[in-house]
Length: 460
Ligand SMILES: Cc1cc2nc3c(=O)[nH]c(=O)nc-3n(C[C@H](O)[C@H](O)[C@H](O)COP(=O)(O)OP(=O)(O)OC[C@H]3O[C@@H](n4cnc5c(N)ncnc54)[C@H](O)[C@@H]3O)c2cc1C
Image 1: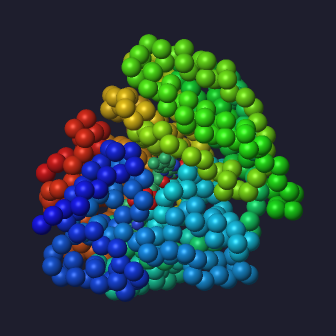
Image 2: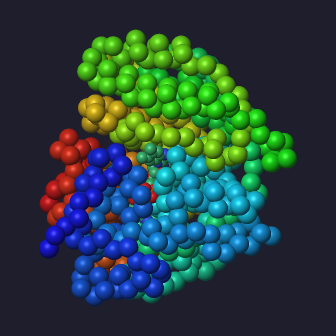
């Protein structure tokens, strides 16, 4: 049977699904799942393929919900909207704005689908804001037997708590009931600062503005700090001039950055100088605009990424340790490290579950070696009780992860109950969630050879 090649955004995972299903509606999703289950086949729901880990990779049926999109119902009084699970976040923001609403918080980009972003615990930054999943009030799911069920904090609460950040392991989400605040503006203040000062005042700083993050450029002592404060629409926008937005976001952040990354990969010895020159060119900027345009930006330079959720108070010391490691190991790193924060989440499998979190992300240019760097830093993050982002590279297994999540075994129990035959299983899911009697061993999912060391997901 002819297989359809698939690869993810960062080109770290390739797969050859036997069937690519794109049902037109929920009944079609249920039919695909029921048929596959009856035939003993496996199904993996897929979003827009932005996960760097093989969490969405399918070797049998790849189920794409691109036709299940749009805002389907609105309860303005409660700020609740029912959204098709395959809706991309950029389309969601546009649709919500027409209703006078917005997504409460977003990450760096908005090309992911809503269901895909929720399934891996996708987050933005903000000490008082949880991951995207914290805004979910209910789900419609197709279970492994083809039944359509709804769940919420009060209806099938265990299924909800497990499936809302569920890696696509508990069922196929067809619709999400999302709490959305009134549309709002963000007043952005972006400026370079000495890294030492940022780390010294880290906790106070992250509490002082609604959404705080910073990027540290290795081989320099400088951090680019971004502080966004929420404002009502009535405050009025003060956007960046078009030429400045184009220069910063297209020319400097993408075009020139790609060129310097290529130069640094060919001549690694140049990287520290390039980074120092780049940080000198960082100009402060202030502007006020619609929230989704400020939260997100374009990332056209492909990269490999690992991100860990850490106990927030420990972030400064962990980053200092990573700094020392980079110096000791002599890695040459053109990409900055990114630090964000979030509030504790209720979702059982959210990496921010139950604790005030700081996220540390390490990224490497797509064409440069990355395994040594990522696995080296991972040792520091693991020692600091870090939990990996499910949609990014990591080497952890269920055995490592279970002690870090108080409700891990509850989630395993729900998985066994709703998917006893492993219809939604994959070798990667069995590795990171465990809890099934015998790990599945199906072929067809491959990764770049150097990747195999990093994600421990081998060709079978
Ligand atoms: C450039 C870039 C920037 C990023 N920025 C951020 C960021 O700022 N913050 C952050 O936290 N992450 C970030 N990520 C990671 C990204 O948000 C996650 O990997 C996200 O899961 C990708 O969504 P997707 O639609 O591409 O889903 P996929 O990667 O296609 O799938 C992810 C998971 O969702 C499951 N899934 C998809 N659809 C369904 C469904 N209908 N029902 C059940 N399960 C489903 C899949 O099975 C899989 O387990 C970034 C990634 C990239 C490449």
